[in-house]
Length: 491
Image (cartoon, rainbow, N blue to C red; front, side, top):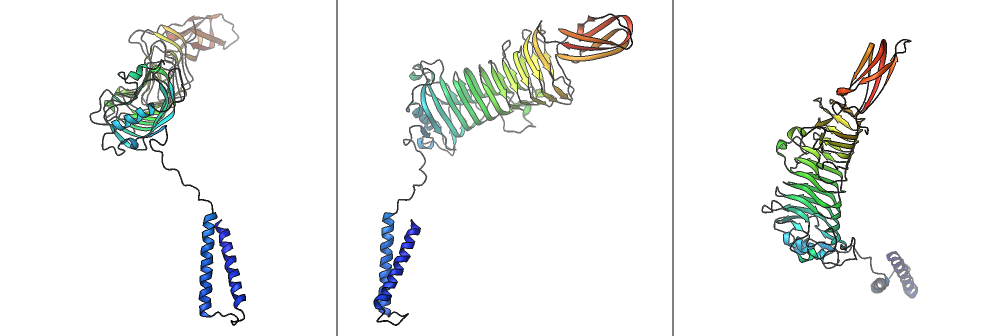
C-alpha cells in the first residue's frame, strides 16, 4: 500500500507542475518562475502531499499485531507462572509458599471430565517455573488425591539448609490430613503427572522425587543431585516412565576420590510395570534398586560406584518373581545383582572394568533366565557371570541360557558349551568345569565319536559328574570325540 501511495503522490505533483506551467506560460519566460509565484506553488504542492498522506493513512489497514504478551496468572485458566505468585527466581528467598499456592490453584482449576474413574482431568494444567532457581524449605506436595493431566516444568528447585532430611523436593503423594484426599474414588492417587525439564538439588537433605501409588507418571529430562536417600522413589502404582535424565549424589564424571563413600540410591523402584530409558546414574551406592516386577531398562549407563568399592549398578531384589528386562545398557565398573532370578533377560549390554553379573541364591531358585549377546571387558580374569551361594546352592534350575557373550580379559561362563578330545585308547574325557556356570550340573549331553581307522567300536557316554563328560569304547581305537552340553534345559 505504501508503494501505491508514493506513485499517486508523484503523479499528482507532476500534474500540479504541468498546471502551473500551463496557467502562467503567457506571463513567464520559458524555464523561469518569478520568486513569489515559485514560493506559492511550492506551498501548494506541500499541502497536496500532506493531504495525500493523510488520506492514505486513513485508508490503509492496521498493521499486524506483534507477539502476544506472556501469559500471566488469570489470563489462562491452565498456566500458572511461579513468579506471578511471588516466587523468587533468584533463589535468595524461600519460595515454598508461593509454589504451593500455584500448585493448589492448579488443582482447583477447571477440569474436563475424568481419566481413570475418580481421577479428575485438569486438562493439561502447567506450573511453569520460568527458568528460575527456587529455594524451598519443605516438600512440594500435591494437596489432594484424585487428579491428573498436570505438568510441573522448566526450572530449578533447591532444598534449603533446614529442609526435612526425610523429605523429597517433589512429593507426589496426597497430604493425609487434607479432607480432599479421601474424596477420590480411585484406587490411585494421581494419573498422568509430568515432571519435565527440571534440575533438583537436594542439598544433601533427603531425596529428589517420590511417586506414591500413581498411574502413568512421566519424569523426563531431569537432573537430580545431592540426594542422601533416593534420587527418585517409586512406590506402588503402575507405569512410571523415567527417561533422558541424569542422577548423582555428587556432581562428578568418574575417578572421584570420594567414590568409596558414595551412599544413597539413584532410582528406587518399589512397584511394577515401570520403565527407565536413556538414563545416566553417575554417583550413588546403588544405581537402581528394584523390588517390583515387570520393569524394563534400556540405554541405562551406571558408573555410580565401582563393584570393587562395594557399589552395585542394578540390584534386582525380588526373589522368585523378577520379570525384568535389561537391554542396550552400559555397566561401567559396576555390575548387576539378581536374587533368586525368575524370568530375567539381559542382552546387548556392555560391561566395562571387570563388571559382571551376580546371581545370588536366597532359596536356590534360578528359572527363565536369558543372558545373551553381551560384551565384557576387564583385566583381572574375573568370571563374567558369577554365583553367590552363601545362603545355599541353586537347586531349582530351569530354562537358564547364558550364551553368545564375548569377553576380553575376563573368563567366559555359560550354560551351553562345546568341547572335544583326541586320543588312542578306550576312554576320552572332555572337561567343561571352567566354562559351565553351575557346578556339577549337566542336564543334557550329546556326543559323536569319529575313529581314526576302519575300526567300528562300540562306545557310550559313561559319566557326566563334576561337569566332565567321559566317553568309553569296548576296544582301543584312535578317535576324535566331540561333545555338546547344556545346563539349563527343562528336566
